[in-house]
Length: 379
Image (cartoon, rainbow, N blue to C red; front, side, top):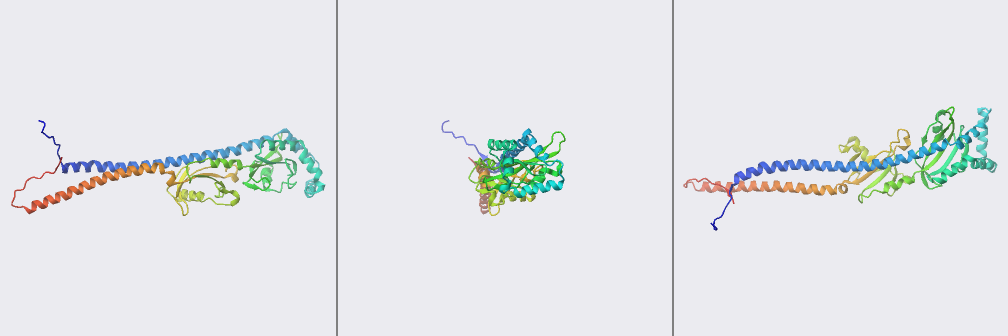
């Protein structure tokens, strides 16, 4: 009939029991799943930072590998080898003492008018002109110096401060006790060219006897690497830092090597990797002194084994509050929904408990009336 009403009734106790047996486990599982999802998203973001750091570090490594190959190719050029052989031929038949006296005399005259004819000869021979062409073709080569087996200058793209180079540590590293070795110095600053550079030296070897006959030293400008550190655009607190093995900043936004600044991010990462639990391969989450926690991805050019002076690291850094903002908002919403479900069940349980207590109190006040079964229902 039209006036009939259909009502669906559930015992309140059974409904509450069902909610407790379903909502609470679901919320507990939800908390575990959301927590693990948050950790997984944090790790994914860390791996992203690690990828950026490793990719940039590989570009730094490639830069040096290309320069080593270029200077090695130049050192094997016939003009270079002939110039060294001709320089060494001047010592034929002379004793070690006579060679030393001759080099010392030229060293004394090198920066005087008396030494001008030799300077012109050194800067004007075919090998020197080849060095100038290389420098002009690639401006990353700041200076190129060719020396004979005793360390005396045989050709150069510029006038060197000294004629005798063998008393320098870098030359002895190239000489390597007669074996010959590629050597790269620590990064330095050149006041003349206003550039940051490293000294890259390769031996000139005799093809027939495979013995050391001279050395070719090139000053390589490394400032062209720095724009690689400014292409990161992840937010106001994101930055890329190039550091030495001791944490000295080579370059970072607003920081240069001349400032002699130690990287707080580098030391925070070191401490976290040594003692903290927030470490994964390639990145760490660590607090900065007096600041917020940051996520730090790091990568190495992979040159330190062969060239200890190039034990550098590339760091990609960002505050965790900003880095995780896109995911933390969603996770907080999920936590809020779980909390709302638990709160609703708790309030319903409290309501049932209070309602049941009131019913029991009313029954206790009417002992003369027969007790009737009480059913709590919900329409």
